[in-house]
Length: 443
Ligand code: GAP
Image (cartoon, rainbow, N blue to C red):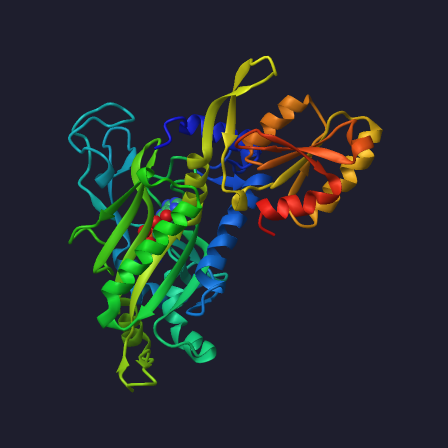
């Protein structure tokens, strides 16, 4: 488990380096709303792209969709979300602070005003974010922002099946925004009212659900290793009968030791044919699948791996964060350095080109070199401050390699390449850099 890092340190780094900062900041912000900055958007995109490649485009049994955020409200009535997508809400009778009843001790004092025994009885609070479509704000115009991406995969099932000609077992994947009117958002990007999801519905013959459940659990573990998460940072929590979501017959929550406690990161659920059956009944459309070999006609069952994008970003940063003593001089003096040991494939910049000084004779070599490398790898260019400070800055944003152009470069046509993790330096001919980096970086 990474004991170096606290949320205060991570949030400060994320803000100062432009990974994630408070949204609408110049207007005083909006509670629990966060914006991804220039580095955060690259990190998030690298995670989503790697996920898509791994789970969708590199597999013959997977296809993707990108559905509308607002669907026909009948979808949410049929799926049970309008009736049952609720959290238990209690309110302090003294200060009116609201809490999720399952997240606090109802016999303890209110965390805000300190009064004891003042909570209302829990009431079911629906988390669907409502809106109205069109100019009339009446019941006939009510619509909902999707609280999960999954329903589109069920509703679009016949069209995907017909157009892609896939055979069971196969999956439909989607990445996109979801909205939940959370009672208690918080802990940075861990719980927000607007978030990003990557999930897929894997359609199977019901007799094979156990095999596929285990298969996807192992694939999720492998994905987490790819993000740099260590096994001892995780707990696989089998959710008991009675505590699972209304649609699930088996759920494993993958939990992570965040600095604020052990909490959910991802979920894996066996949704049976719950959703297809309800949509078939509700829409009157036949959603059954006919096996071309056996002619068996049946509703496929579903295994659903669900991955929060923002929680993926959060645990990738938390797991990568390191503080360590590092040399500052050849005489053996050391200083503390903060380094994000991000997997190279996820780092926002792969390379930083750093001319030793701002002198023109170095810039004329370093500038075009950075432009050349940028054609293949995300490359930063930085010429201000001492070289030591610039190395530290690149360490803090997780750049795997720094390329220093110095005065010797002008005669030997070589540069110094510094490795983020080992801090080892290699002297490499400029003409050999593409080969050098191809062996160490993808792309
Ligand atoms: N389709 C299944 C589904 O939506 P879920 O467990 O409710 O399942 C899936 O959500 C994932 O979405 C969670 O495991 C978590 O990673 C992420 N998630 C859920 N609520 C979130 C929130 N309010 N803010 C950020 N991420 C959230």
